[in-house]
Image (cartoon, rainbow, N blue to C red; front, side, top):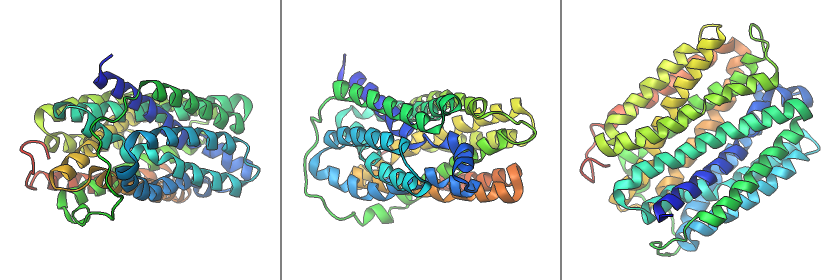
Length: 390
């Protein structure tokens, strides 16, 4: 098996594990709300605590990887995160669960901080966007798997067994990564340093950080509130049936892979605005109180989001490297913004649901998508540091 294929398969498996563990509580929000006697907005902290811990830890693990290497952090992150996932299933109280989820976010930071930097260093340049798309496709599959597994198992045996099942999935993926991931050959260790000034001042990087925050905010807001919508009138679905809505996630896997290839062919500047338009169209489709159009809208929105995120996350290290910014630093800042958007707008979605139900949630998400689309449009006017690439 070629190095390219091994790296893509391993990082896809790592993406599955990371995002299955990260989003393992999202499908359980209504059950956690009932079990612990908390509001919908409060229940969303079981997800926001993890994304908040992840976002903050990325600011440390990204620069740290410049010193200790990419692959050691990936292996350590996956093993520890699965272990903390098992501890979450045993949490005796709501504060304990939130504390463990915060810790799990910290332990998960090793993979996202270095994955795209690893791909840039170890694979040929002409495959970068495609490989990044495959990695993001793995994260999409992981997001679906975590939600589906936790919802299905929880419906039959309770939320604790649902979280335990996802933790076991994470352990299995960690074993796959240990077997397949090629060791770094082109990594050169350097002292962990403070953040490069250009990482905070390059207008294209700043726009990409904003796009990550806004697109992820819209995405998580919709999925956080969707469980409450589907278990309420007029749908009145059970937790297991509502969890099946996450079967639309393969649309994200496909779109991230296809958009990566299109970006290699036509350029990232041309592809990203299209992803924003697709996301907005999907949001509008979810407005009618019709299960078919709601699910179809989720599929379209998911495809659009992963197109945007797949292109943006692969673009950041390329732009950073061309501008003399350490790739892992820029990737960490992008992901910090990405998960800050998740935490902020994910929590606001619970409040929006409580005050204005689904139309208010859609309005919140649409505002994020519009702002992200304007930033994507601005990137078309910024000078490229590598012709037709960044």
